[in-house]
Amino acid sequence: MQADITSRIRKDLSENADEKTKNSSSRFFKEEVKCLGVRDFYCRKNSKRLF
Image (tube, rainbow, N blue to C red; front, top):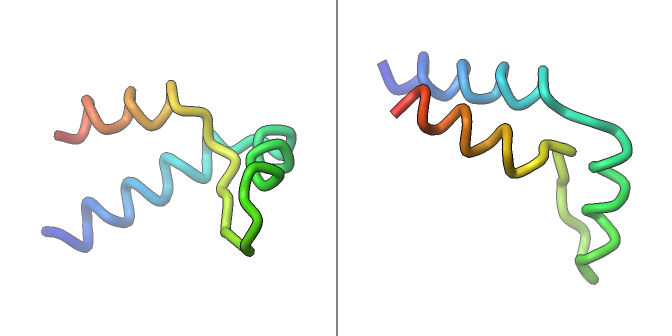
């Protein structure tokens, strides 16, 4: 069950990823971080739908 939700979240986030957002997000961190390039709107939309 939990693996199913995790895979759905990853799938949804990768579908809404944007290269421009990914590049601009990485500028805000001094250390190396893995940015997916997903805008906050899509994260909130998916979380409301899944939970």
